[in-house]
Image 1: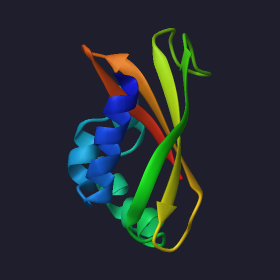
Image 2: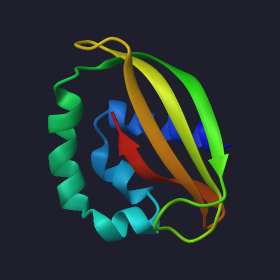
Image 3: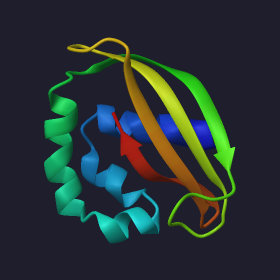
Image 4: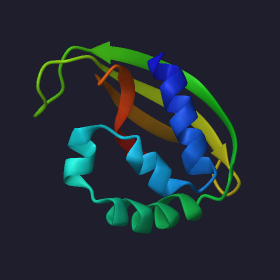
Length: 109
């Protein structure tokens, strides 16, 4: 379920729906990054890579805790992604189970 949530969320990023993607993140993420910061930063980060052409899950790992976070249910999913301007990029989505759903807590590429 966490993997499916990560893939669905990344599809929002692929489509440029950064505001909607932010709306779906975990509370801890929203507390640290404003919607405007997120919407302003993503075109710079993702735009330089071009469109995502393909994405496959490399590994998904469950953890009962993360540094600086309360105990809970966390999953980190690592993707191998081919973008227009960069092949074999790594995307990392960390999710937390919150409010009955897996919600993104962190993203890196």
